[in-house]
Length: 126
Image (cartoon, rainbow, N blue to C red; front, side):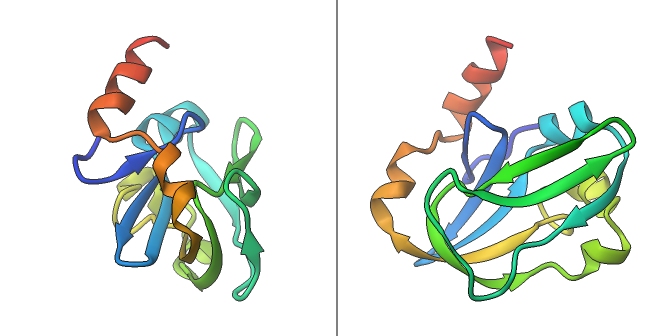
């Protein structure tokens, strides 16, 4: 499932852009490939990331995977629910399973992201 109105990376993260804040998560495709999530390592509030920096780690029954920042920004909020309920990402990756919110520090970093149609085409090649 790909949601219109979100932006996507080739690493299967999504970003919901609202003014200068990006809410970040992993896509439905990513959570399906990972399987049942058992742990999420969230970034620290106030930490700054460049686009494609390692932002967080999700661990499933299969493996641990890095989550990369789709945009350059500073962490202003994290989804603390994931610490006790990492399965929220499996259940609702685009809403309840969001990972963090970044204050965008470089709007050019947003330009490299794919829209839903481009991401669906990208998935078609997998």
